[in-house]
Image 1 (cartoon, rainbow, N blue to C red):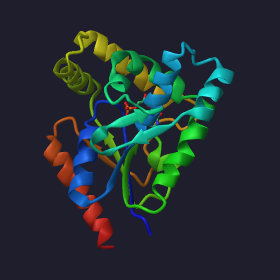
Image 2: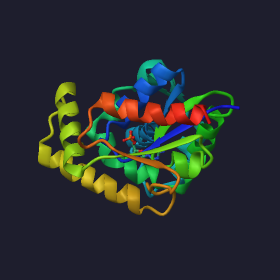
Image 3: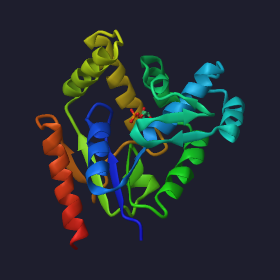
Image 4: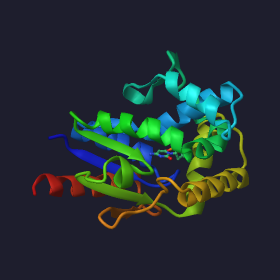
Amino acid sequence: MAFIVAIDGPAGTGKGTVTKILAKRNGFIYIDTGAMYRCVTLECINRGILPNETKKINEVLENIDIKLMPDSVVFLNGKDVSEEIRTPNVDKFVAKFAELKEVRDKLTPIQQAMGKNADVIMEGRDIGTVVFPNADVKIFLDCALEERANRRYKQNLEKGIEQSYQEVLKAIVERHRLETEREIAPLTKTEDAILVDSTDMTIEEVVNTIEEVIRRKNND
Ligand code: DC
């Protein structure tokens, strides 16, 4: 039986970094489901499709080919889009596409299939609630809003993306609202998920905390 670790939480909690380290150290396959929603969004933006153009979105979904490769490399329809999917423009629109039923109905089964025969650690918003409600370990990684904005602001600077702290904070607040208030698969902590608040923790501390939870579960 495959062992599934679900890591959910909002943007800017360090989820991606932590999940990647945990995957490497514990021999799990790392799956970034946000990258898949970003690919759909990028393809729609590139074709000038708006979130309310359901028919056109369905056409995109019918033919879309997303490949998650090692080291966070992402291919969309045969092209490396690893950087393009993480620009502020995709950030701005992704929650609008991610809330659509059509989009979620397409991506959720693909994610479920990925965890069928392999030990995976999967990060996203609805992994413990919808994708793998029976995951072996469920973590809800949280962090104070201002600290999340601060981290994203610094990440952007490192990538050479110019956006003021205020703009980053505003974008994070808006995305958080959309992700938690949407009708389908909203971001929420299930009762059986373990809450880890990373606000005052280093990456190493968060990794160690989650690793301990995995170890305990493995020894059950
Ligand atoms: O984790 P991220 O910031 O790369 O995610 C991008 C967007 O995709 C985010 O706005 C929420 C959405 N998402 C989702 O709705 N469900 C998931 N399982 C993963 C991401």
